Length: 393
Image 1 (spheres, rainbow, N blue to C red):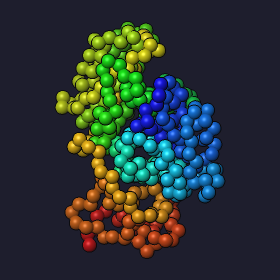
Image 2 (cartoon, one colour):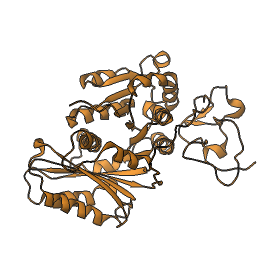
Image 3 (cartoon, rainbow, N blue to C red):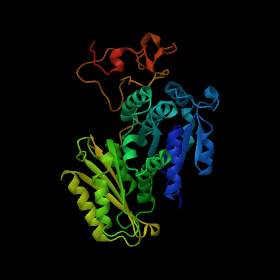
């Protein structure tokens, strides 16, 4: 099968590259995929899976990685951003995968998303969040970077590892990691399958793009039936209704304004099963929710059914065209990513008055100085900017 040139799977950082390789390995679909990292070691796994690899920050970091420093990851992306261009020809939708907490994934991903958006490419970002038992600095760093990703990506899907762990029946660390990669891979792979090898009910890439463009935030759900089990549709519905990422802390299903449903089955997939699954999914959400769905039939799935659900919330109205490309802001020196530096972007506009200006980077007179970092926070950036407070002139 020929990979679609208008869709790109892009993994950033060690975790993102590993997940990208896992997706390609399990999907059995010819992806147009790219792995981006500051650590040259990631190139080996990418090469084993026939994935293009781009080493960023080579001159600065010598291919040895960032050592967990998000500022270094951000600078590395700035150094070599133009080298992405050969891989972006004809790309209209990029699925970006990263692991947050530190390093390249946290530092480079927001910059890469902005770069893609400036070129009119729609972006769907999957980001894993660290376990809560990890260091407080990693958890805080991931929280701060998440806000940056939410501003930069058209749609952001966060995947807390603690919740993904609930999907595993085994407490073994490797097994939990494999389950997490498998769930992410199932979601990403089915998007490609629905477009590249659709069944009788087709979902084209333009419909997917319209959902992603207005999505803002989304949740991922996945459920499957065991081979040859009876009542496969009922089993899938039970799995979706209890899937940890789709549920509120108090137990109910999270609200959504739009749903993207992908159903993959074998040659024995029945119309009655599709109807039962779709009616059950609609019953979980409000009656006004927008639903787009597609099916994939593959003989490898004879006897079983898998369903992937993307539940979009906080949507913005879609006008029928992707937002116009915005001019690139001026050069910005490295700033730690633990707390967001608020700036005028295509999605975030200051309301209720004009903001006191200290330049595009927020660093004012410290524009050309090395940042003063404390616990990952750039102290040269005014507090009101770091916390997103609006101070009128």
